[in-house]
Amino acid sequence: MPCHRLIATGAAYTPPVAISDDDLTRLGRCVELARTALDDGDEPFGSILVTADGRTLFEDRNRVSGGDATRHPEFAIARWAAENLTTPDRAEATVYTSGEHCAMCAAAHAWVGLGRIVYATSSAQLTEWLAEWGAPPPPVATLPITTVAPGTVVDGPAPGYADTMKSLYEARFRP
Image (cartoon, rainbow, N blue to C red; front, side, top):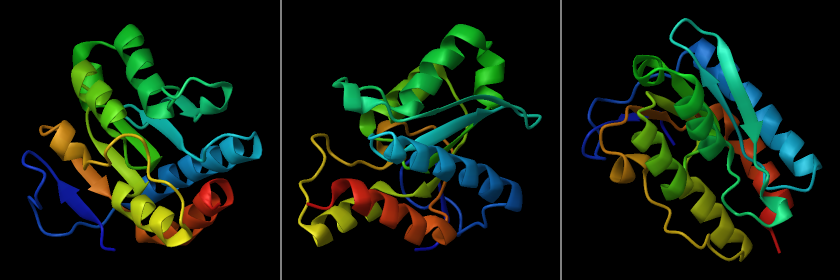
């Protein structure tokens, strides 16, 4: 699946773009966090928040195993950013994540005014893999980020992480 940029309408806004080497390195950290989540008995998702000048300010992984299904790292980033960053700093920040935001996290991202999102694997990929394994779909519709947050610049997926993320998802979700 090619990398693509989505903005405004949810349709392809520009031709496919390459995700930079720096983006790939940051996505690698998200995949490490996803692996940590899985190792700790959680769903394999990880995310980081990076400033415009390249500093990582916050990172987290899924923490839903305790029973609170809203404990997604992207949601935690939105809450942290709202409490700790100015409006301009939020708008200039980038959220990197191992998997495309769900509708809840995309809404939180937009409501607090965060900037660009870069993801390793898409919700469409995860949905396809779940069906392949005979696993139940998520309880919330898997909408593209730009359907929920139409003004957000979104880059992904990063094809180099598909196999790794698929294996992490399979370890957690395959019946």
